[in-house]
Length: 399
Image 1 (cartoon, rainbow, N blue to C red):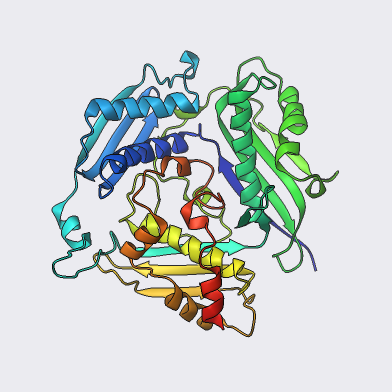
Image 2: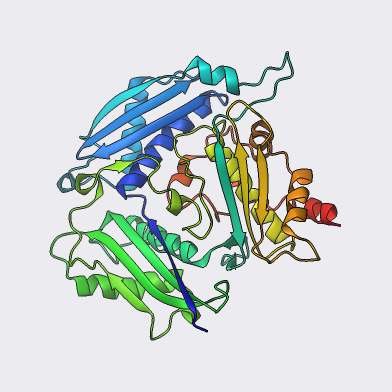
């Protein structure tokens, strides 16, 4: 039987859509820093020397239009858009702000009421997915990762490329916008990664740089830092800037929008996605908080040794606290005589998956979100939904 190929992509912090995500989450963080109970849903569009903001906010925090404009400029400046020739410059761009107050109709259905004992309801209807697998079990420091290999390395390539651009002089022609794509060859079951088949990198650069030089620099300096030598062989293909050049980039070349890289944000297509974006949304929106909870559940199930691969779906209706449904799919990898129905019951007995329970357990009212808006929301071991704090409890409930 033939082996199988699976591909995932990632984009850098300078990609237009990710610029928009980072601005939205930086504004969210600013409100949460002043009022942890803030309700925020902020969308961002970026284009040639313009940033347009829209959305709804309810908060006791006092953040002025000037404050928001400075947040926008700070984010763009830190990404690296400070060159006049890129036509998207932190110092000269125009910020248009259409953010307004949140609807009271949403508030009355979502907010908890201590007097009546009403728990916090879900901020919207929908289904959220979490995923974990053993393709990448640990990072280089021995921390648990449990993420799909194609996405893990795709993130690693553009993240390291940005670090080189900001901190080293070995590739001085680099500019902020870049994308990566990694194709992994799997064994006949499609679950065991064997090798890297293809690496694709598109990176923005100064004019006058030869593509052969860029490819050689990436091969010499970038790939060895990110991808283990045993996964690259003489047949591994490296494709760089296939159109021949990548000088015009960023929001000047392609408008960016919040929430348009949801597969990059999650599992690179290896697991299902409910369709809701994360950035710019406070944790009362289950699009965000329940997706984090689902990842937390899936990762702990795999780390507990109850399955080698887990996908979990959690569904909600707006204003209701308890999930409508919880579904676990182990793709036949459940262990110790357990089946997927058993795993679902164990999850129900172990985790509080009501929005208030999720927010309290994972500490989601803190201003932690801008850091998630580039290089993926999962597999980053310092984030609260990545912690293996339920492993022993799951094992006890599994008997």
